[in-house]
Image 1 (spheres, one colour):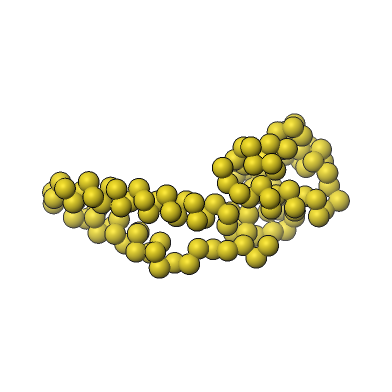
Image 2: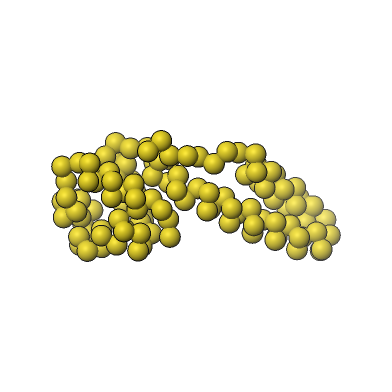
Length: 117
C-alpha cells in the first residue's frame, strides 16, 4: 500500500469539502473514499488526479510516498535480472545488462523525491 493516504486525507480536511462531497465529485461511495484515505486500498490514478486538481497540489507531492518503495523494488528486481542475464552470457544479454545497470546506477544516484508537505 502507498502512504499517500495521509496526504489525501489532510488535503481534504484542510478544504471546506467533506468525504461525501469529494466522493460525489469522484462518482463513488463515501465508504470507498474512506478506504483510500485510510490506506486500506491504493488510490487509482483518477483519484490522485482529482485530488491534484481539487486541492491544487503537486502530483509529485501526492506520489512521493510511493517513490522510495517503487525505486527500491525496481532496483532489487533489476539486480536479480542482471544476475540471471550474467549467467546466460548471450550476445542479446549484453544490451539488456547495459540497460539494466544504467537503471540501477541512476536510481542509486538520484535522490528520492521528498514531499514538500
